[in-house]
Amino acid sequence: MKTAIVNLGPIVTGDWREPYAKGDSILMADGTITSVGTAPSDLKAYDVVIDADGATAIPGLIDSQVHNTFGDWTPRQKTVGFLESYTHGGTTTAISASEVHVPGRPKDPAGVKALAVAARKCFLNLRPGGMRVHAGSIILEPGLVEADFAEIAKEGVWLAKAGFGAVRTPYEYGPMIAWAKKHGMVTMVHTGGSSIPGSSGIWADHLIKIQPDVSFHVNGGPVAMPDEDFPRIVNESNIGLQVCTAGNLRTTLLLWKLVKDAEQTDRFLIATDTPTGSGIMPLGMMYTITHLASLTDMPVETAIAAATGNNAVVYHLNCGFLKPGKDADVEAFLQSGLALVRQEPATAAWFATVRARSSARVPSATIAPSNSSPATSDTVTRAARLPRPTSGPSSVSPIAAGSSVTDGSAKRQSSRSPSLSSR
Image (tube, rainbow, N blue to C red; front, side):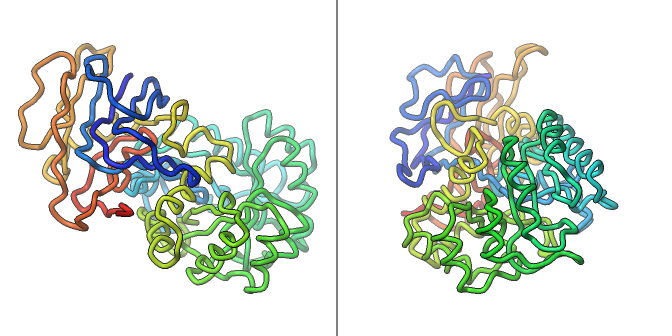
């Protein structure tokens, strides 16, 4: 499948050092971004062409702390379809914070291994609304030995989470984190006050000693570390510092100042830590981005990078950037998105007219205003212009907000999509 997004306004790369790309188009083929720049004059070779009408493009947001279970369901709020709803807020990738919310979840070594392997393999075959879910994070429990990590690594498990285990002290996570790292896993540790019965608070002393890759909800989940711990974790470690929408806003702002002064922007990550008691937050990533961009001196493009490229680097993902060679998940979002707009044309800002060329090929499609006539040619020769939103902020609305045309991801654009334009 070949897809072109043309007539873009600003293209935010997801790289805070080089935040904007030159040009007005993003070209994709077979799941990979092939070009960011000027569109070719002839677009007949593309299966889908989207005329963005000057909208801003950002990478698909990466929520690096999602409490998934199995399927698109959570028992925390008894909600079905929450992952798909997050794509409406521009989140195209979710990373498991462990399957700790699975009802009756096991706590013995064999059980936590089986849970992680099963979750990972289930989500390899499931993309809710087009979202890619990296599931299967082993919950670190007493009794695990190095051979256990070697075993599950062979099954593809690459995430390990500390903070919910029945350890006597958080220092006992140290050897397990070291074993997980040895076998190629990204290690994550709950930070702040205890969140479930039987667990204990985890503070700077613990983090500096056990050295995880990421300090989860370092701004509190929702109870944060003491203020004096924040300079230590910034200046005495290289740990990734993840702030979450469900955490403490005051300490989020405090942490950014410390990170900026220490010139450690790469370590600043944004996630939601949902679903939890705080609820379901489809726009949670946008919420934290706008808080940081409006309440601090953080440039909006840096806040976007903290929710995209920074997460991608820490978690070793080939997404999060609008650059050639990076993943473009547009096919999965188009397949679900086009079906949605056919069902709800009155509520969509645009809809795609589709005519199948054969049952074995991707349908030819153009993005067109809802009052236009269906396409009559077998190939896409031109993309009709998207109608501009008639409500909301007057500045340019990014494609990511509501439509998820980010990181090569396309879905329907809400006429109420919030603006993240820095202009």
